[in-house]
Image (cartoon, rainbow, N blue to C red; front, side, top):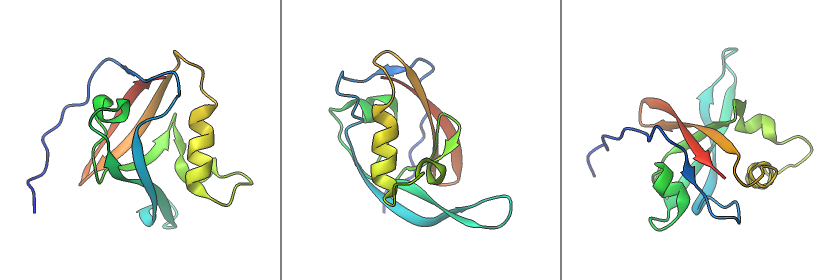
Length: 118
């Protein structure tokens, strides 16, 4: 088992390629968090952050949980889409090149925001 990473998120957004991809392999983790009403909520689990891609360069690492994007809980992105990963990807694609998105990340017990420039 590896040691926890000591990581300080970058202050400046990291530019993503024009494809608006984060370079991450993702999965849904059910019951990842509990909301203020005690209801379990899913999160996006990073199964792999490719080291040569923008998501990794922005500070996202394997086993991170993405809880929010631009202040919206990932579960609330779903709308009419049954698949949370599809909803997350669709939301990423709605952002224009040059826009900054903010991802709320949970790594172990640490909670922090990462700014990523599309």
